Length: 132
Image 1 (cartoon, rainbow, N blue to C red):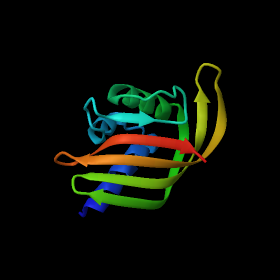
Image 2: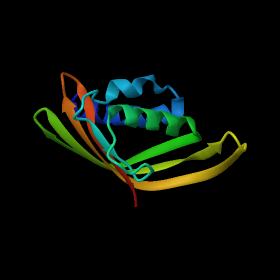
Image 3: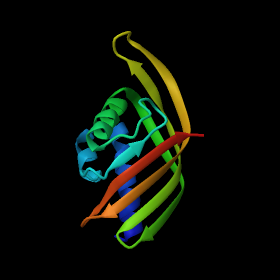
Image 4: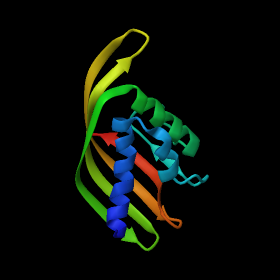
């Protein structure tokens, strides 16, 4: 498998967790290091570390049923043991409020940037998600 194929597979693994609800792989694909960071267009808006990112991703994915995603126009730039990936991202699903037993359909047209490092396998070192 080429580096580009491995990198896109890791990014797909992140979003596949929303479909399968198998959240165990999230810890494996992110760089568990103080250098890890993430930003999102969902609160909280601060720069998040590894642990907060994992917890928020897990919470997000269990709160969405019928989740689907589409990665469009990926651009993968590899610089030795570092890579930058820019994608357009469409996410759909039903936001579930388990306390009120209600749901709200969501469609998010967004963009995402990922920075990955190879140590020795590719790991996500930074994520930035934003709505268009």
